[in-house]
Image 1 (cartoon, rainbow, N blue to C red):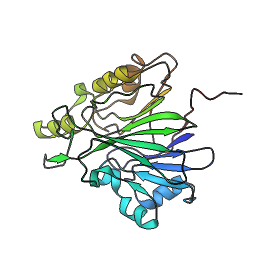
Image 2: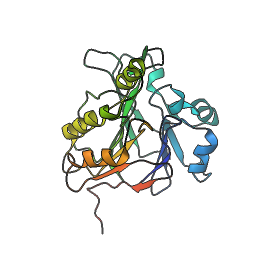
Image 3: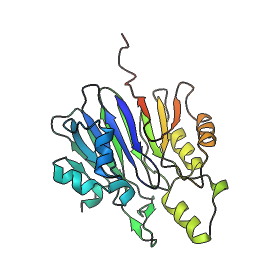
Image 4: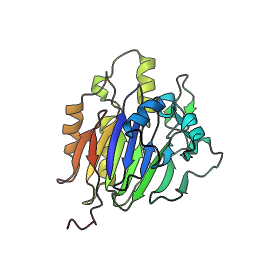
Length: 247
């Protein structure tokens, strides 16, 4: 399994999980569809589904167009169900997927719109025989859920509190709807095991984050054998199931 980052940041977010067979799952689609097709090598036949975390355009720009093209879209924020956890089985696919609501313990959504109103946002637990399990979550102040034996974490880590700039309203918006490096480290500590292989941080602020500093801080809390990476456009990394025999 390969994780390929098409785009990451406030201008757009899109990642691809590409199995050895070519079977591909799109994680967010916040860029023009042409960029996604380019990231796929113009081979869209192997795409088995699209996961959308929330409705903001930097994560969902191409969602409608992809749906009209015939792709199966998983967008739990459009479902009226009150359940905070939902499971999905994609047809003719080895991916198993569950979504979880990114809410506070008192039931409020952790992400907000520009006017300060709540924005429904979901994270995903993804399993595939080639990679084991992955958590994908972004645009959230915190994650109240805990997971067992996670192999890979793809996490939106937006800012360092010490670097926050701007007026009070701007700071409040950043803090209310995004995760700090300190909170990210706490989440990884609570969910780490000797099976954790990769922590990939994405969606870093261009103003309030320093990639090298984020990597240094995260390395202090992960298991010794775990890789710590900051996602960049065009990046590709291998994701393997630790239970796979290497021979």
